[in-house]
Length: 404
Image (tube, rainbow, N blue to C red; front, top):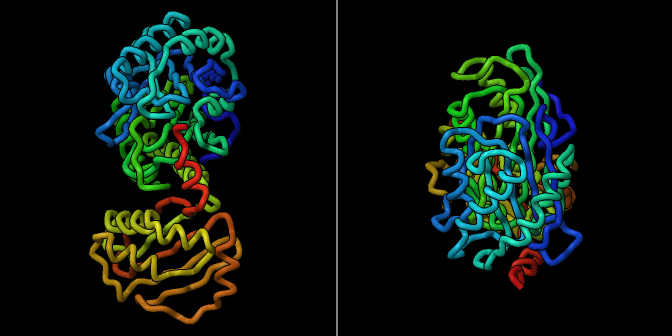
C-alpha cells in the first residue's frame, strides 16, 4: 500500500535539504541555490535531456555518478550555465566548494542549473552562498523546492510511504518546470530521494523505465530544454534487503517511484507557463501501448487543441486532426472522443464522426481547471496517458521578454 505523507525530499530517513538566496538572481527575496544531502553515501541514477545542446552541469553529473553513487545534490536557479566557455569549470568548482564545506568527495555531488541560457555565470555568489546553505540544512524540502524554481508559480513536491520486504520505506521528490517542456526526458529538473535499499544498477533501470510513462509523456510548449534531468538518491536507511533483481520488492519500489513521478508530472503540466488548465489525455483501445503513447502525445502537443481548451471550446475536430497526423496506425472510423471534468463527461465524437451534444454543458465541463480528453481507438487493449496544459495569451507574454 502506498500512502501520501509530508516531507518532500526530507521524508526519507537520513535526508536533509535547504535553499538560500546567494545573489545569482537579482530579486533578493527569491532563493536561488538549493541543496539536498544524504547522511550516508547513496545509490544514484539519473536521466538527462535529449537536446544536443546540454548545460555544463549535465556533463559533470554524468561523470560524477558513473560509479552509481552520490551523497549530495546542488542546484542553482537564475542561470542555466549553458553555452558558456567555462561552464564545466564552474560546475566542477561548485562541486569542489561544496565537498570541502561538507567533508565529502567532490565526485559524490549531483549538480544542476536552471535559468537563462548563454549568460556568463560567476562562481562568486555560489561560493559565498555555500557555507550558509550547508549550515542551514534541515527539514527544509520547501526551501530547496523554492530555490530551483524559475517561472514556476507553484511549488512542486510530494512524498509517499510504502513497504518493501516488510520494511517501511519512504520516497519523495521536488520538481521545477513551467516552460521549455516537451518529451523526451528530461525536460525539467526533478530530484527524488528514498531510504529504500536498491543497487545502482536496478535504480537506474527503474528510473529509465519509469520516465517512459511519466516525464516522456509531458508537454507544455513543444520545446525540449537544454539543462534538465531527473536524478535520484537511495541511501538504504530503511534497512530492507537490497533490491538487486526484478522481484516483488523491485516492483513495489517502482510503483512508489511512479506515484512520485506521475504526481509531479501533473503538477508540472498544470503549472505550464501562462496555463489556466491541466490537460490529461487518456487513450485506450489501441493496438499496443506504443501506439497509444503516440496518439496521447500528439493530442496533448497540439497547439490548436490547447487553444480550444483555453477557450473552453469543445472543438473535438482538433483532437481527431491531431490523431490523424500522429503517424499512428489508427482506424479513424472507430475513434470515440469525450471530454470529462469535475462537472461531468460528454461524448462529442463516435466512430470518427460528430454526435449531437449540448454546447452549453460542454462549456461548463471545459471551464474547470482540470480537463480529461478521453480517446477510445476501439482496436485493441493498449493504453497511455499524457499530460499538458492550455495555450494562453500569457505564454507569449512570459516568453516575449524572458531574458530581459
